[in-house]
Image (cartoon, rainbow, N blue to C red):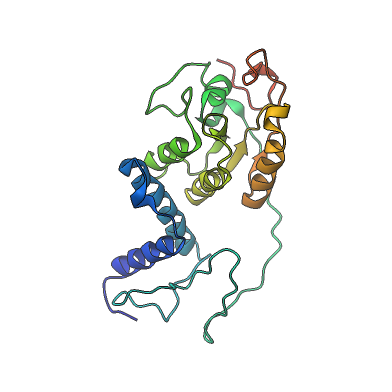
Length: 238
């Protein structure tokens, strides 16, 4: 193991883990968005290391280019080093969380503006904005200062109604919020219509996998997207 500065050593490992995922952030049309998405993934990995959920393998060296930094890719079986310690999974029953819509943070697209911001259009720096897609929502979350989400209840309308069924980005949004210490994440659904058939099932699966609460779909109004927000369980009275 290298004797370099511990922070530099961890940063090197985290960078190689993210690179091993195969996401070509540098090839994105928007370099700023690509950089924000990469930083979001790196932040999640660092948080897992700090929380003891992930450890840097003793075989990793910051002096070399490691093609496999020790984190298995999805679907690929990896045999851990002989000195690895594998902890048994523990059954943890979370304590009930009392949710107050008035104190929650509302992030995402126009649905989030209707639920928590009085329907205001918003702008590029607003928590929620009309027309914002999933990738832009993730970048916006990543732009917030450290500590913004710690101990907070977050209502998330992912933006897929504007950018399409980008399930990996929705999962990354929730993982990012979890990594930043959010007390809870409540994921908003999409219209219960043929146009979005199966989307709510997919969102519920992602919520179950990431520990979020899925709020379910809804019956839209005449435009096929928006609805009477006061009928939804997380509506904040203006």
